[in-house]
Structures are given as structure tokens and as C-alpha cells.
Amino acid sequence: MKIVFIIDQVYLHGGIERVLSIKSNYLSKLKTFDIHIITTEQKNNQACYYFSNLIKFQDLNINYHRDKSYFHPRNLVKVPNHIIKINTALKVINPNIVVVCSHSVDTYFLPFIRKKIPKIKEFHYSKFIEEDKRTGQASIFKKLFFKFVDFVESKYDKLVILNKDEAHYYKSDNTIIIPNPLTFYPENISDLGNPIVISAGRIAPVKRYDLMIDIWELVHKKNKTLELHIYGSGEPHYVKKLQEQIDSKKLSKTVFLKEATDQIQSKMLHSSLFIMTSDNECFPLVLLEAQACGLPIVSRDCPYGPKNIICSKTGILVKMNDNKGFAQAILDMISNDEKRKELGRNARLNATNYDIEKIMNKWLHLFNDLKV
Image (spheres, rainbow, N blue to C red):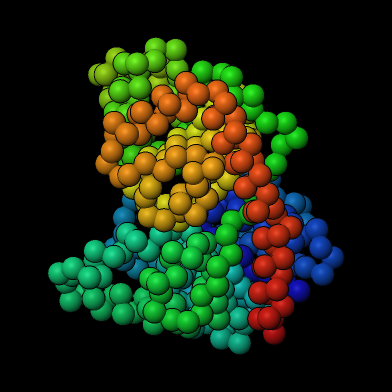
């Protein structure tokens, strides 16, 4: 079976890119699959994650201006060339199925080209972020745009969403729930003895690392030995802003902004707790990775991802905007060795529910149902 995955790029560290590497590598090992990945702006960069040499890559060299909206005139003029190039690529490859991974311009036109090829659209973000715009006093343009979005989504053969809470946001009946697969499951787990609390992800406003730093200020007042290590990359000006916040609170010896790393497993195994302060999540892969390493988790109970992974037996979900409660949850977890280790063991067990064999079996069933 010939599968084409479409994504903007695979050179920047991110959950979508990581999941694609796991899925495509798994499929490429199966003799019955021929895997192709089409990018639009790889810019001759090396992939940031490992991809099997059995996988065939093709870059269309569209190169949208990522600092502007996809609907900005400088990007819109690139769309016709994008359509022509991707249509040509699909005609040559002639795949059995096309899977659209990232949410970029091609999302909106792919159902309408090479119509006989089944199309799957993956959603790696929460549609919660659209709720206010859809239900509030939106402009006529916004209302028309969302009607267009709903129409386009109805034209995909399947929409893959990551958790059950997202389902009610979709107007069409073509959704299927397939969570992200676990990327690793180390033989050993953390002994939860190091005074290090870890977090990881894109350094972006939605992740609310500014809030995490505020929370850490409360933690540090009561525990001077703990360190917070944050792994990730982001826009330099935003990273600089966070570092200035750390410095202004005199936390530079206890909070450390570190670059994105391909050694996150090792970093987790040397930590005692994982924390997350996002405003919204869909299905954060990093939480599964933390659980696989035996780490309990403290997270804001944001829509909707964390609560689909964390329960009272594996961590603590804190009400939104309760900074004091979050700080106290960290302190309680660190001060109670027995509880921390019990939650860590349970977290490790929960991670097995997302074993790659279990998750990829769902994808295989989907491909077999749709293939032409």
C-alpha cells in the first residue's frame, strides 16, 4: 500500500513532526507499505528526528511566509503554484491514501484534487481555541470562513482526532479517535530522587511558561533546593522575554531555559516531576513520554488533552488560574516520597495503553477500510 503524508516541514522540533517520524518509520518496516512524505518548506534542512532511509521525501519548495497569515496576499499568491505542484506529485506517486498532518494551506484544497484518492486529515490542536470566535460576535468574514472550514472537513474521508472531548467540535460525522503513540518506553525509570522538576515543549505563549515562572516563584519561597528545567525552542524574542522574567524575579539559579533536545528521555529519567501550564492542549505527547519514564505529573486542567492522560492515580490536575494551588501541588508531590513513587508507577503503567503496536493497529485498520 502506498501512503503519502503531507506536512509543512520536518526540521523543527515539535509533536507533529515527532509523531510522523514514529508512524512513518513503523509503516516503512512493513513490506506491504511504500511511504512518501511531501513537505512544502523543508529548505534543504536535515530532519530533526530519525526517518528510515526506506521513506521517500519530496519538498515542493513553496516556502510560505510563516511570520504572516496564510491568507496574507504574499502567501495567497503562492497557493496556485502549491496546488499545481502537489497535484503533479500525487499524479506521479499515485498513492492509495493521502494523510494531511500539519494544519497549513493544503488542508483547504487537498480534498478537491485527485478526488479518487482517499484523504485523511489529522488534527493535532484543540478546536477549543475556535469556540469563542464561532459563538461570539464574529465578523461576517469569520462566520463565512468557519462555514467554509466545516464544508472542507466534511469532504475528507476521515478526520483523525486525538481525544473524545474534541469530537463535539466537528460538524461532520467522519471523525475517528486515534491518540498519539508512545515514542519510547525505557527499560529503567527515574528513581524520583533528583531535586529537578522538568517541563518541555514549544516555547510559545499558549504553553504559558510565564505562568510557570510565576508559580515557581511561590515554590522557591518554600523550597530552595528544587530546580526547574524547561526544554524547548521558540521565537528568540519570546525566549528573551521569559529569561528577563526569570532574572527580574531573581530565579536565575533555580529556573533554567534549555534548548530543545533529542535526549528528552535521559532528561526525564534524571527528574522527579513533570509539570505543564498550557492554556489548551489536544493530546500532549510529552505527557506520555514523562509517564513512560515513571514521572508523576502536575498540570493545569486545560481543555482538553491533560485530563485524557492524567488521573488522580497518576498525577494532579489543577484548576485553571490557581497558581497557589499549582505551587502547593508541586510542593506536596516533592515532599511525599511514597505518594510520588506510587503515582510514578501508575503513570508508567498508563503509558502502556499507548504502545505503538496498539495505536498503529488502529491506523492499519483505517488504511485498510479506505484504500482504493
